[in-house]
Length: 423
Image (tube, rainbow, N blue to C red; front, side, top):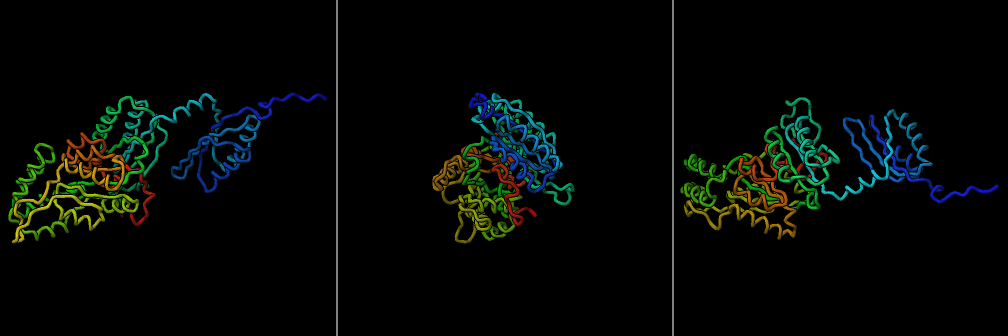
């Protein structure tokens, strides 16, 4: 009997690409059992993604096999998923579709983070609409925060955060950023847009302003109240923070008004500083993760050093008040003023000391004198900032505590041990 002449292509079969989507109640070992079925047929996994929402699984697997085996694989998967009481659907992917998908892998990737006390459908819809209008495609959506209780009174200071991973090149990057900032103000939530480069997940140095950032007050205003010149100093402070007058000149004028104040009041003020919400949690996670931290402040070294000791900051640069032999402030200061320009210089200096790229730095502040370092850092964040600062900054947090910075860095609540979570 003559043998049939079978070509090599026929013997091996034609490569076939199959996408399976599985949904249903999740349980331990489910993914392992499904993959073992594919393994029996020596399938090559080209892509895989899994998510679990309220104990419900959504699993997608794109695999390659040969057409003489695909029917057997699909039949066995149907039997297995039916026994597991989960749903499965199949799609055949053409080589052209697959190659098009592969060709898009080299496109730019961005991370868009939205956060607030709560996240609403309206906020997600508006964010997604801007993403779509810019020609970007959403690859994945991940929740970074823990589960939110239904009863707000149980834990009123909750946080909600969702991270979008998107791919493509925005039609107008600056326009997209402006739309996000406008949207965040209108719908009362915060949005961060970052390019997903090698540096985003390898930040190493974070520099903070102190007054109205790490603490919920301006220390010079507290000193002025004790000196009986609170209204005068507070008016100058607000004008300087809004960028209406030069910081250096405003600093000299305010310090001069403190002349004669006994330095004993500084200890009492330091021990009663109103600390920013989430600072202890933020510092605990940053230090455990190997970050170097610095206070770069237009305030005063006494209070910066107090925070350094309490929260384990690595560096403090601030202004030194001159004290007379009688233990009272002279109305003068010692050394150079730490203003906006100096903060920027210190940021660069610390990056050199720590031997890191400037793109690996983060700066956080609220006032106009923080803008130079916010724009210089790899990631500049305006925290509960003045309108002028928020308008010029690329990223801002206005709705939750300072530990919201962790979500901009990609941290998830599940990374944090129970003892470090907010009580």
